[in-house]
Image 1 (cartoon, helix red, strand yellow):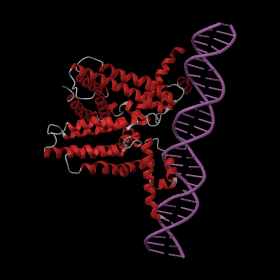
Image 2 (cartoon, each protein chain N blue to C red):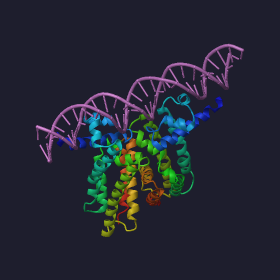
Image 3 (spheres, helix red, strand yellow):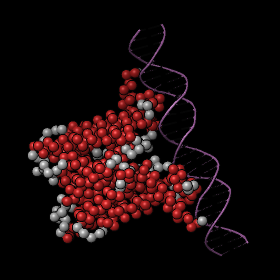
Image 4 (cartoon, rainbow over the protein chains, first blue to last red):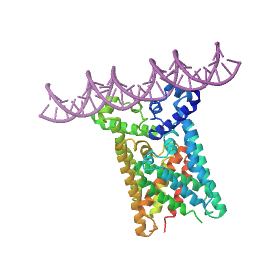
Length: 198
Length: 198
DNA sequence: CAAGATACATACTGGTCGGTATGTTGTGAA
DNA sequence: TTCACAACATACCGACCAGTATGTATCTTG
């Protein structure tokens, strides 16, 4: 059944993503991934050269795709930039329901754990953050051009602070293990975002 | 030399703190800690019942003490609350110089890695965050009473957002591996803090 | 001085880890 | 039909891990 090769690969990627999201990259066990998928070790090492390569693939394919779907694409929609931002953040808050919030942001988790240890991870994570920042910055610049966002703010610096705050909120909520705290933190973020309007 | 028992214990705690700060708790190797200190495994297990107990001790003694010294105590100083906050944050930015910033905030690192896995860690981390929040909240309330902080803001919610933003900034800087980015993020934070003045 | 406790030191164990060597089976091209 | 190769499957390896069993030297106390 050579036609199932892609399915095997995707199955491994999905399971690896979940294991890594739950336990972190280093603590993620290849054997656990194999048990979960029913795939054997030979198959895994046929598709991925090493655990590191598997981790890179999770970033390059799964997480990048999720970011595109949840963030980059919504932020390209028309409308008042601050409203667009708020709606996207709210939608993300709904996406990470009660259970998932305790696992934190997949990208932030990996950044915290791996960026100081492995350059391959660091470069990939840095690249994703750059794209994330750019998508926010583009939105703010459009707002300034349209007159709906204060021209007094620096779009690059502000984007950086917005993203940092967002990651910080998710991080705090992860530790508190309640999206109650996420909402609380979101209130502060929303109030800050409002202050960017003209 | 029984008088050196405390010195041995402190040496282990210090080395454990550094190993954990660098690699995380799970990836921290007891053997590496022993190599670093020259202490033997028998001595380690004489002072600490398990790796987990050692980790708890690092939180309860080393990290709690560092937080007290770098945050709680400075925030109790007199002066305009917003100025006190800004100065404390700036001083912390200087404390985490070029090298150390890539390791991130010790408390946040442990929170991300362990709070979802182990309740002992979670409770200790949660307690420290609560004290941290309280020290900021107390400062904001004093400002409101003295008329130097806007009464329109909710002290608890605002403290939460400030701390989340701060952790987010450190997290972003850790990944970027430059305190250049920390400064950039700090600019946004400072501008937000300024908006809290009357 | 005796004796128990404290503070280690050494050697070892079972288990898990990522990774590999080798074998087998299905499949498409020649 | 043959044959190379992709796509696995199985069994195994050395390294490292936290933890332990046991021995020893020093100190404190009666």
